[in-house]
Length: 188
Image (tube, rainbow, N blue to C red; front, side, top):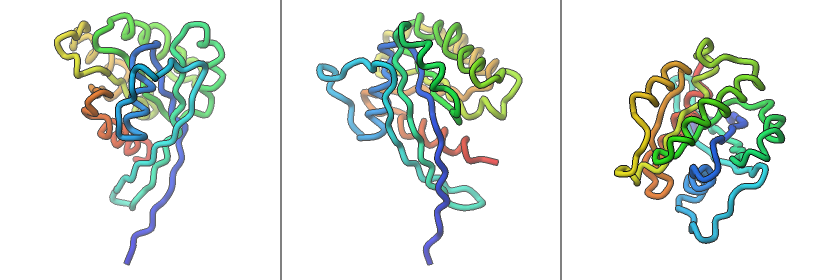
């Protein structure tokens, strides 16, 4: 006897500065491979990808379809992107563990912009914040980490975000990241 899957579809924002590895992260999870950096181009505006994750909960099996919106990190595209935030169910705030400015920009621009557009304060709404994950990318460059772990942990706690360290290059925690996000999205 086969179990029936329930399909759930979610719009997911993938945000952060240019060069933090958003497109590489998505490419890794969708194809299982790290893209050739010599052929990878910066996203202009937004790009769209689909990731399917199967999740089993007590109340059944779910096929979670994540519509991944990869937003360009360049400043000139930011205002355009704000209009595309509407209807989002969750997201990934991605920063580069070797570039402190990328973490600062998450705190100063990306997170407040999403809070404004979705009319929510993540610090006061853990039920909404659970659908967003703070992602430290480039874990493979561990010797070059330039951001204090306690600062990251404090920010994640203040905003009620899960924090996951990944490496798009090696694949470390990439599938786990999307499994955690999918599970959070469908949990009652």
